[in-house]
Length: 345
Ligand code: ADE
Ligand code: ZN
Image (tube, rainbow, N blue to C red; front, side, top):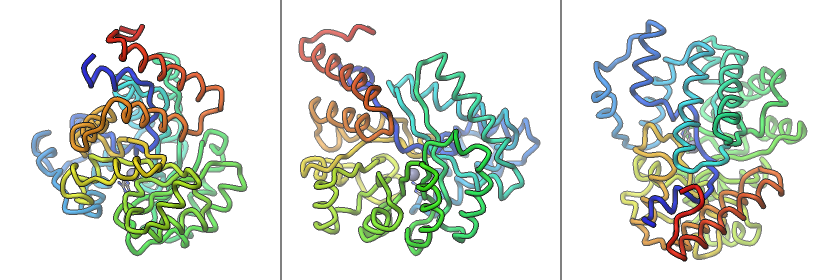
């Protein structure tokens, strides 16, 4: 079995994907036309050519601009459904998906518009493809904490449809401690808590996210390597890192995939996972991310199966659902070792 087929057949969870970051240029044009919005590009090729980023902020500027084509419930539905169909083709069985309400409410688009669109697509995907989905409301850390609190209040009618809350956008200078109040409210409401930390920001932001926000997973966390005490803690407490290797190279967190910290941290015993982040902007979905680290960091099939197992363990699925997917991973590994394809062909 070739490596791509092996990875595709491994049941996997995508635990770090921004639905707005799955907006492909083709859909961007389609929605711009549908909604009478003028784009600053003439063609899909021109859009793709603009996806050269100096750093996280350069990407975010273009990403928020792109999201402006999302207006109606149908737009949010189509975006979510397209991501889920694409993810399922890569063998994603569970997706815990970020969305950025403030990117939409700031343009006068309310919770009912995007939530009904997302939820309708998720219900369809669950029936059609058997993929399991959770939504993580992510607060924008470049905006003031009172806005995050207002966003939390506005989400009240949809609380029972949320899996968790997260924290994203411009990291440096916007430490996790600013968002203690809103994260406390989310924890008290029984939601899971995750946070982007240690992507461009220092390892101290990882400690801050764990200690002050109560984060159960750290999104990215690649800069944990700068502080051995942080790495030691991640290992001891088995705190998952949701890494996104292609993102880190596109945003120049690492100059080359060969320099990525994933394999070093995996070998030290950190619960590392591979995810897609903003796949439409970074040149690949989850399978591409697995294959990029396999090639760039010399991972073998055992490492790849371990990454898939970690993704299931690090998900917020029930223990029974995790056990079933882990069992399927064992079967795929066993059949691959015998040189046979898995039952799905
Ligand atoms: N929002 C979307 N993608 C992001 C990333 N990689 N880091 C921070 N915020 C984001
Ligand atoms: Zn992210």
